[in-house]
Length: 475
Ligand code: NAD
Image 1 (tube, protein in one colour):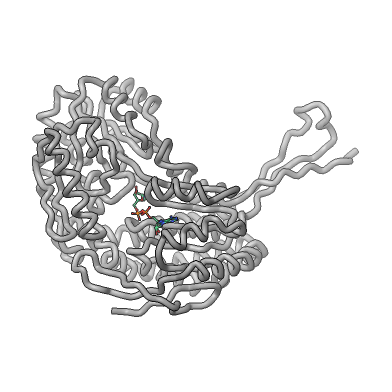
Image 2 (image 1 turned 180 degrees about the vertical axis):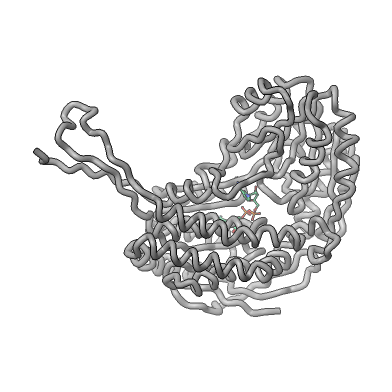
């Protein structure tokens, strides 16, 4: 067990109180970290005000150089990062290696986008009275950015905030998820080693419900970038006041399987998209809306594939997926499946719980009105609902308060185009599931799934402010 410090106002500190970090699979305490107080949050923001001044004064190429050096260090430490992710998140090692392997790339893309951020010339003489004036826009950093992150991708989702924020010349106060602070602290070490000014990044560990409101309400903070559940996102909007907000929230992502689809391909993709990271992915496939004509054939293709997924010890080479983030969460998923069964659905495979591990499940005949369709599951199960035709598939897909991602399997271009035009989701995938992301692409939901876009170019835009400049008095 290790004793870790947090990085607060330019120094590593032990903090007055401590809290434990558990391995969710074994229940073992793997480390302790500080339990920061609201006074620490206040200090972190005060230090970030000075950090932001220093970052803004650094030329873009120097900020990019820091991030590129950090990327090289992250590349060297992929295995260490992966072991830490696996231990604190219960993520299967192969998946954790995949996550850690993307760190260098996200940092490099962020470095590039931060340095490329620019304004534009304005055609002022398009309006009467604009003749003889020169207009252009300038981008400047927001200043102090608060980043609050969830447990499910403890490196990737932190990087998608910290990378663009620093590249754009801001200072960041990061509050990682309580369950997964160790990876964030390791990333902070990497950035400092790469030459980041120490006041530019504080990583404060502790309770979200205590530190979150203190950070989000602070008027010195100009931008909040939050990824997590919709209820917490809503709570943030109530305390934030006049600030820029990016909210990446919950989802119940649908995948449509139409009668003309390649059913083997659809089943193979859904057997991945519903179960990666034990289903704890915001873009996980939760609802499968399959046209009745191919319902039985599709299930014949899907069930054996899901039965073949090995869920267990994250560190065992045989495990495809690991545990959920806690036994409590696993019990919640077990209950959600049992409730669907009480309402008439059938479990075709999986759904058994052993500690924090839930075996991958396919639940068939789930009503669109059932909680397993309507509420975010965040677990390794898909809810299958037969639909008559493409009209009903689109209607049911949209019958959700969320709108993060969606997929359709079909060979019919017209049906695919109807899907991309009519389904309200931030990302739409034709002949794939919503569980797909390239780091540079714009990423973010509609409706209750959030506000704003990540992906370094878009995050840099959201973490900078546009100023309009007009030069008068030219001849
Ligand atoms: P969560 O909402 O419980 O916690 C997220 C973060 O918010 C944590 O750091 C937590 O400590 C902090 N927090 C808690 N209360 C707070 C408050 N009152 N004010 C400010 N911060 C507070 O989410 P989680 O369980 O860690 O993660 C799972 C959720 O995240 C799911 O709903 C999932 O869909 C969502 N998620 C969304 C995306 C996306 O891109 N849309 C990506 C990953 C996860």
